Image (cartoon, rainbow, N blue to C red; front, side, top):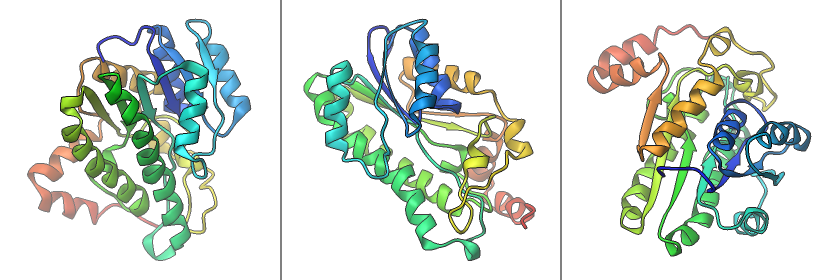
Length: 262
């Protein structure tokens, strides 16, 4: 996707953090935006920022319960055929395996994996019919590695990589491109919103998250990867651990066992 100008770009999880930054950066590139999240008031705030640069429509949805085909019909009624889908909505986790209810794992998989697959499957036929499109999915460094307290979150992100590896191969000849964005720590509310073992929010922004990459920088790197048709982009200091696991998995496992946990 060399140029976002006048493209219809649908971004989920757009009410804050990386999603908001992606929306503003896409608006600055001239995209016609459709923003989705549960929090309508926050969406309206982001809409105001984006409309300084381009058109921006809103489609408030709870992706945990929505029918993807019906959502696509609503989306296209607002902005026309979707050229770029950005799967950004998601939840993280902060709980040990022994303390985590199965319902928490199911909730993480439902939003972080199944909702992404459902929306992607919904937009793909139209993209194929029009001869191209781009699906961007905000994964994480833990889509490649894992760490304590994030077993369900890491599992969902790993699943995304398996799915989109297949999708990128299947749809290459149809002109559809995919980008997996894998940031490390980004300074957002992700750790505060993360689920604990009983499903309640963690409620605190951790020091590692607060010291992370700025959302605006993360968004710019993602859009640059999309414009270059890169399939996967890993960013942040934490990418070191991706390479460490790839080339010295034993050393990585040894270090991971020494990570402090409650």
